[in-house]
Image 1: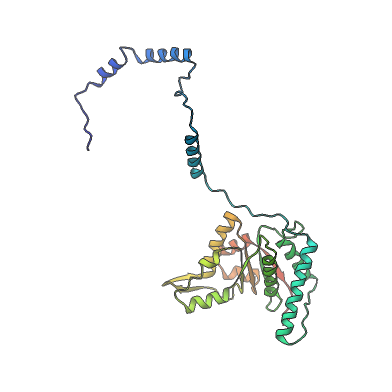
Image 2 (image 1 turned 90 degrees about the vertical axis):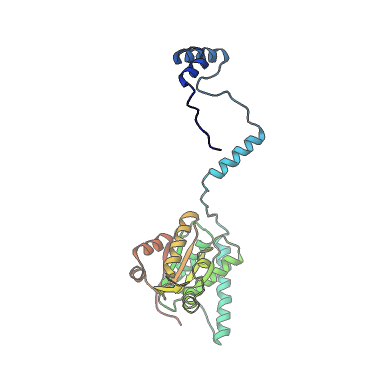
Length: 277
């Protein structure tokens, strides 16, 4: 129902009647005298006790209004260096036996001092050992020539982290397979699954540029990196990359913004030397 203003009322006359003929200053003085007698403050309304139910309601309102707290990763060291070293090398030995069986030849790992240093630091990194030479809060950008063992090493650490329920356990993604499937299946979503969880992207940079998906042009690499960068900044999500590209080649292949995102999220781990295949 529409409310209409009654313009027949004399507002000033009504105000004087309610004030009993007192001026505004007289009303203030009277209020001050009353406050002195009662101990009340002239600036505050009388205090009313909040019931337990009311207190719970106010607390729920404050909780809803408060901004969500940023997730903090657990950087507590998960096991001793000796235990971790023993378990990792047992997995290396197991993988060597698999390769020997698959290829019908004796296979042994051969690491030079630089490669051993990388492996030792990767062990320390995944157990959050403060002795690691790299930041424990950033992912790893593992790069080098084809055949230098980068993928094999990271697959072993994927298994090591999973078997020992480490906080840095991660999933593996082949970016080559993602690009091939995106090009052959127009209904395939290459982004959503790959922005979940801590993840390692193998063959990164092998395919670049946009593909058509859901009727639109999409640069898969850049879409994934941009989404994961936001999650890295908000909750410390880790992204690892394995690439045959040098950092200079990555810089040339991607936009300055995306290259900056990768540098911010990752520490470079160089596997030097030539192919061992």
